[in-house]
Amino acid sequence: MTKSRSRTTATLLFDPKKKKNHFWFYVISFAIFNIPSTSSTSPTLINFGDSNSDTGGVLAGTGLPIGLPHGITFFHRGTGRLGDGRLIIDFFCEELKLSYLSPYLEALAPNFTSGVNFAVSGATTVPQFVPFALDVQVRQFIHFKNRSLELQSFGKIEKMVDEEGFRKGIYMIDIGQNDILVALYQSNLTYKSVAQKIPSFLAEIKLAIQDVRDDGGARNVLT
Image (cartoon, rainbow, N blue to C red; front, side, top):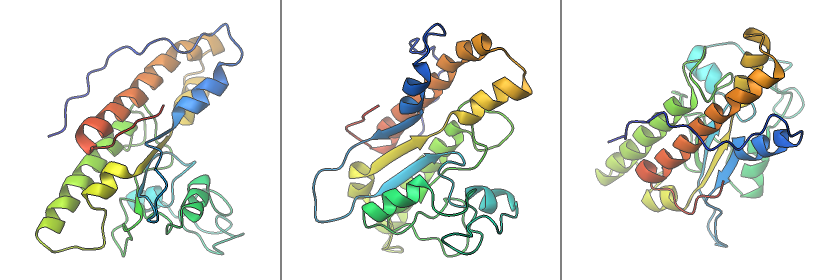
């Protein structure tokens, strides 16, 4: 059962007076944890995030048409990615000899043998205007894991992530840019006011990592 996510205050990692904080915020918001050991088998890749790593989640989840020129330089068709070709997550898959990640929300012929992608364009750490904030993505992951293992125990599905795959997989979080954009442009806040909000964004990322570790079985978390 998923633990309730207490809204605790994060340690202040961002000092508005320092100019180099944007680097540390990016490092934390693109958290990669559980670095795989050298193995002959490819690890599982499980991703959470926004448009930086959305491989079709917003298309599957909202039906928002995303056609050409998106995808024009590589896929030569719209795939739901907000870019003209591959995303960073796609290059990770290629380097790890994995198939490109299917969105969790994809109903038609998804391929979850290499992992799963919960990223949805427009997603935020703190719930905003897109109904797929980071905490929702984590709950989706926990349901996906539990249901996958249940179906495998019944012998109904073979080509899915198994328990070892979940435990030894690479977990990635690439999120936070939309929280800042909303604060800057929609709320029309000053730089100082936005900087004061960043600890709450980091708190959500920290909670997500804790939940994935505690409920999802991930280990060796690196943030």
